Length: 209
Image (cartoon, rainbow, N blue to C red; front, side):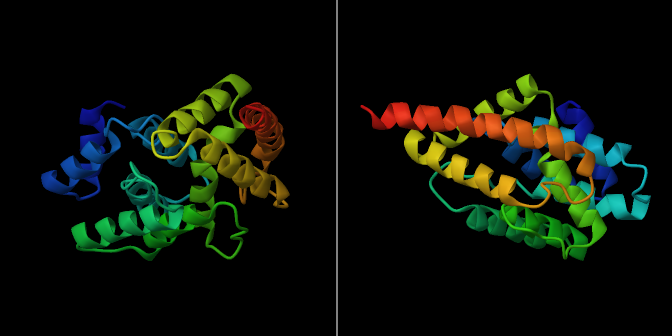
């Protein structure tokens, strides 16, 4: 999807030009290497293709896709803070607020935790947001490196790697990484373990100097 197609999608969701332009400008910020329009497109594509979701269930997920990372750090902050900022922008700029959209935005700040209590559409959204881990290794690693490039503009690299390894370890510790798309789990676990190994080796090398 190009920018014009995203604009058309946002207008189909009922957003005015000012709100749509704001969303698209946020995802085109220069510090974004992963959490950009490409990431949003990936989530939207997965929602489009999920036949087990009714159209009425998909709409709030499309909105969540556009809002969940609309505020992304270019200075040190916690995931909870920038997800809260994203939620505030959604509430401030939209006249009608869907509880599923709100739940999905908030839930993405807590991927490391088990969130089985969420409704099925939100569980789908959480799975789609982490779908990159279930891609073939080369694509998964490319996305992981883009996250590193993005966040190493904000944090010292050693701090990012330590936090990334800890987060990925928490994902592996869960009974299942995915709530609905359980068929993705095996590949994702293999990829995550491989990322942890590479990042851990990098951390050891840094600490030896």
